[in-house]
Length: 141
Image (cartoon, rainbow, N blue to C red; front, side):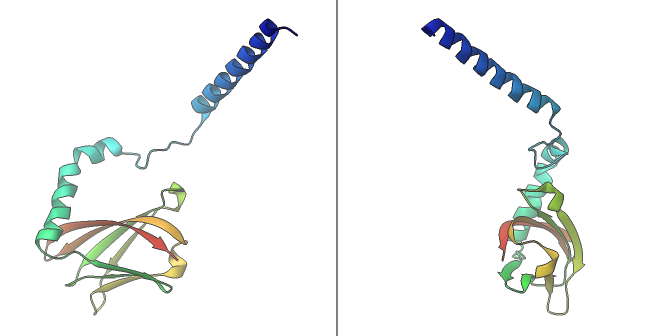
């Protein structure tokens, strides 16, 4: 076998590889986007930014505590909150939890409600009729 034949075989294998990747990309239903409505969220980015900054300005940033029992979020005052938990590795595990604080101004998520591993936690909460937002990455044990 001379070098010309080897070159043709190498080119044919490379072309088959590229065609395989192209077909897989075209027929794949999975998308790596974190959000389906990323365009609308981009338009509303200023509202989210303002809510994050207002939480810092008003000193109402919640305290996050992750331990063996689960997740505890402590607020300064009574709050109504919506927890948006996203699993970046598997979007099918994403969940939204709506809760009110208890008498200790806490929201507790038990260990059995969330799988262990990394989560992106976004808390939309209302205190004294003001909307706030807090985001943090947590790792459940």
